[in-house]
Image: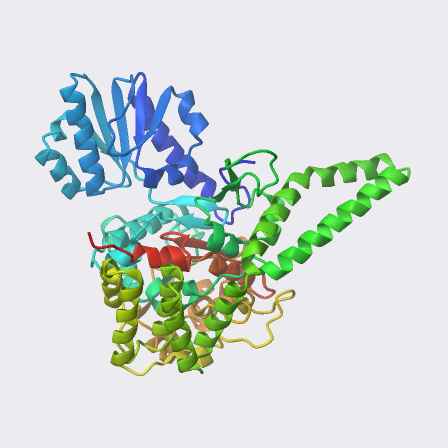
Length: 597
C-alpha cells in the first residue's frame, strides 16, 4: 500500500501543495548535474519521504545517506546536504569537509537549509573555514500533508523552544506556512487565536500580509473561511491523558512516525521472520483504517469481529450454494479487502495485550480521578507510590503534569517533597528536566487557587455515561472526558470568542479575534450570527472550511474529535488540521527531558 497518502478526497487541494514541494526538490537536484550523494538530516527523512518516494530519488541516479558524525562514504564527486538549521548539523558537515580534504578528495559541496537559511548556522561554517567551499541555498518546505485533512509544519521542539528557551523562530515558521496557504487559497477572512504563542502567530501573519500582501484584486471568495489558532499551553491536560481511539492508542503504545508504524513482522502474522521489522502504513488510503481510526478502541474490536464474521458467512455461501456471476464478483471485491482486515486484526490483537493490563486500567482510572479533581490525597499518594516503585519516568511525569496543571501547581511542601523523591528515585541527572517543566509551568509550586473546577463545569468537560459505540459528543475519544482544546474550537467556530470571554480569561494566555481583508461589509461573512448559520456554505454551495492550527502539537484523539464534530448533522463545515507536530503525552514530556552531563 502506498506510503504517501492519497489526497484526492481532501477538502482543500493539498495535492497541489505536495506537488509544488516535489517540483522544488526535483529542480534543485536536476540543477546539480551528474552523479550525486544526497545526505539528509535524519529529522527530515520522514518528512521528505511523504513528499517524494525514495524510489523516485533513485531514478535520478542519487545515492542516499543520513547525516551523522561519520564521514560520508561515497564515490560521488558531488555531495548535497539537506538539513534543518541546527548547530550540530553544521559541525558534522564541517568535519566531513575537513575529513575529505585530509584524504585529498576533490568534491563539490551543496548545502540546502530546510526551510530557510540561518545566519547563526552559516557563521559556524565560516568559523570552520568551509563556508566558501559550499554552494548554499534553501528548500522552502514549510508544511507536509500527513493525510487528506492534516498538515504538519514538522517542528519538533516547538513548545519547549518558546516556553523554556524563549525562541520564537518556530512561530515565524507557522505564520509563514499559513501565509503560503493564503497565496494559494486566498486571504483567510476570520482569525481567532487563544494563547500567547497563538496570538503571536496571528500578529506575525498580519505583519506578513502588510509586507507581502495576498492580492484581493480578483475578489474570489477565499477557500478557507476561518483560522482558529490554539496554543498547546492553553490545554496541557488533554495530551497527558491516554488516548482511547484506535489511531491514538497505536500512537501511545507503538508510536506512529510520518504515517506509519514499525513492528516486528511476527506481530503482523509473517512466518519465520525472527526479529525482522516491517513498516505498516496508516493513512486514509487504507479504506478500513479510514473507517475505524477515529472510533473508540472498544468499538473497533467489535467492528472487526463483525466484518470477519460476515466474510466467513459469505465464504460459506460461495462454497455451498450456486452463485450468480454478479454475486461472485461482489464476494471477490470483499476478498480484496482481506489484507487490510488481516492487518488491523493483527494490530488490534497486539494493542489488546497492552490495554488489558491492570496497570493500564489503573492509570486510566487515576487520570479520570485527577480530571474530576475531587480526591487530591488519593492522587498524590498514587503518584508518590509510582515514584517509589520506579515506574517508567515518562509515565510518572505524565500523571504529575496532569495533577499539577489541574491544581495550578502543588503546595510548596508537597512540590518539594515529590521533586526530592523523583531525583532520589531516578537520579539527579533529571534535575534539568524538572527545571524545564517548572519553567514551562507544568510542574510547579502553587501560587494561586486552581480554576479547573470552573473551567470543567463551564465547558462540560466531564460527561457521565458516554456511549462510545454511538457517541453524541466528542468525549467518546477519552471515554468520558471532552478535550478542552476541542471544546474551545467548537465554540470558536459556532459563535466566536465573544460569548465565552469569561471562560477564556480563566485559561492561560490572551485571546484575539479579527476580520481581515475587506470582507467585513459582505453579509455572507457577518459573524454576529455565528459561523454555523451565516457561513455554512461558500458562494458556490461548497461546505465552509475551517483551518484549526495547534501551536505546540496535537494528538490523534483530538483530530478524531474534530472529524467527529465536522461529521455531525447541522455542522456544515469541513475541518483541516494544521500542527507543529503530531504528539502524545510521551513525546511531549520527552521534549522537556534533558539529562545533565
